[in-house]
Length: 185
Image (cartoon, rainbow, N blue to C red; front, side, top):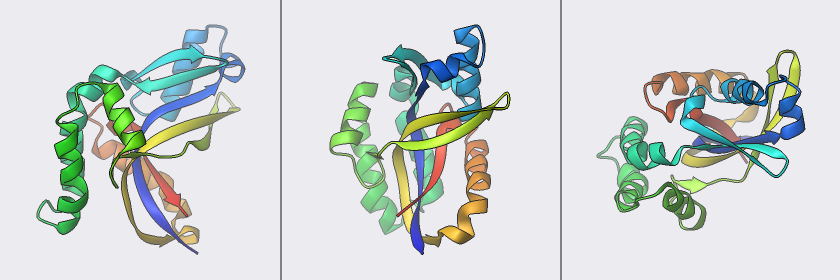
């Protein structure tokens, strides 16, 4: 069965409050354990308690200051700047983002009018293990690419490796640790 390979940037993630707080008597330490286990750049996220969940979202100031610069580098690595794919999919995103001034404007555009390679995706579910306890995480990425078809059966073992490689390649950037790789149907 063929599926599309997609890269994305985790824009927010959340976990049930009661499950997070089981990890440590100090809720701040428990929340830190979760964020450090899920993304490689936990300091790029701010955490709040919303309803009965912990919610981590990329810091607005980082988004405002560095998102366009990061995407310029990322898209140049993904596509050749002279390619039709870059001109058709990436350049319009970069041109539009240069006119936005707040993180909320970035997220609103990605959710409502985002382009092929900068749009809000449906929430996903993942599990992490901390101190021998499994914890469910719901996360929402911004899609950065959607390419070709791959066989899920052939890619499954490589997905985690590919995601770690992406995060290491961009580890000097506050968004690097939030990059994700998914197989979409």
